[in-house]
Structure formats: C-alpha cells, structure tokens
Length: 330
Image (cartoon, rainbow, N blue to C red):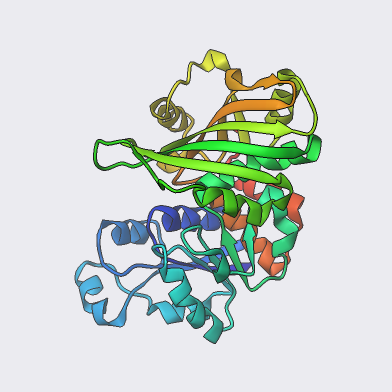
C-alpha cells in the first residue's frame, strides 16, 4: 500500500483525496488545512486525518476537528505527497519535500520548472516513472492532451488551433484571458506532446462555473472521415463522445448528467465531446469538447502516484484508476 498525503484540501485536493481513498493499492495518510472551516469539517466527516499549522491547533480543537499534526508531519509520514495548494505555493513547498526526501506531484498552477516532467497519463506516462517531482498540467491542457494523443498516433498532427472558453464564475463579463497569444495551454501541451508540431491557443473567460468549452481545429497529416475520427475518440477511456440523442447542450446539462449517474461532487473525469460536432474537411478536423475543471485532472494525479512509485505501467494504472473511479460508466 502506497501511503499518500494530500497537501491542500480545496477544489482539487478534496477530489484527489477522495480518489486516493478509493484506490485498493493506496492509503490516504491525511490532508492539510490552514483553517477549521466547513471543508476541514467535511474532511473530518469523511474520516480523513487533518494536519494544520501548529499555531491554529487550538482553533481546530475548538471546532471539534482535532489536528493530527503539522504539514511537515504529513510530508514525513507520506511516501508521496500530492501538492494541491494554491497556485505558486507548490514551488514554496518543494524545498520542504526535498528536505524529507518525499516525492511530490504538483498541479498546473505551478510553472513547468517546478518538476522534472509535465504529465498526462494517456500521453506520456513513461516519462514520469521513477521521477521525484511531476507536474499535472492544467485541467484545460489535460483535456487537450487526451484528445491530441490518439490523433497523433493515428494520423499525426501538423497544427492545432484552439479557442478555450473558460468558466469565470464571478463578474458577469466576457473577457479575453490572456489578451496576448498564446495562452499557456499551448506551450504546456507541447511540454507533454512535442509531436503536436505547431499549436495556437486563445483563451477567454465567461460568467459560468465548472465547465470549460474548447473549440478545436486540427490539421492532420492524413484525411480521415468524421466517422473514423469519432470511432477513434470513442475508444479512448477518458473521452466520452456524447451521443446526439442524449440532448446534452450545455455545462448545466452535464452537471445533471453527472448527478443522475451518481457521480460524487458532480465529477466528470472524462472529456465530453459532442459527437455531432466532429467534422472533417480533407485533413482538417473540428470539434467541440467540454472539460469539467474540478475533476478532470484527478485520475491523472492518481496515475502519477503509481508512475513515481513504479508500481504499474501506463495501461495497468489507467485501468485500475478507471475501475475504482467508475470511469467509462457514464
């Protein structure tokens, strides 16, 4: 059993902790929280040990959330730590992980330099085997890499042009983000899949929550018909090609879809590609896909744990993770 700690129990950290707790080959040591708020209480109610800053242990005790120790204890007690702290804090924690000789997995909010490799399991699992530090690319880049990887293998990619419509969730405005090109997603995708060749990514934020939408136009080195591409993508374990007859038109519909299928926290780990959007014109492929920003990187974190530990190859790990999380059951 691999002993895993999760440093940070926010949007990503809570989902990674849940996933680790479901893995038959892993044991969740605990999670860290800086304040005894409702999410810390939720961790306690799920039976997770909570580690907290020493100066706040009395506050945690008063909230009936006894602290199991400090973050350094969590790191020392874990064989591998998943760092799910706010963007930029992972780099600050890296020297602490090094001090304890504890391998760590970072999230996409950190720069690529924080780790020895950037990672998407179906694309470059082997590169992370035995590494000390691995970075999971962002939710959007993870989704792009999952779509690009089988296209590269089957047809080759000459160029990709992507517009990312990203959920903003606050002010009711639409804005380019960033206004300069490319957005970070293109360079990050190349960190994992340099075979893409040339990629341009443009981003904008819109006033909605949870689901990003991508518009992809990919220039392939071959000219498959749309049916062949649809069949190829339908075969991928972390891609769900949505049948047109389901009547799913939006992120709101996808939330209901996840809830109706019993997915905890409305998690949709898979890319959701609208089947009817898959269109080809000679070597040009276009499609729309939706990415659940809160959960699509979760299985990648689990697979990265096994890659670092060297306990499974790519196919074995992906199969174990998918089975435990119910992926392919949507």
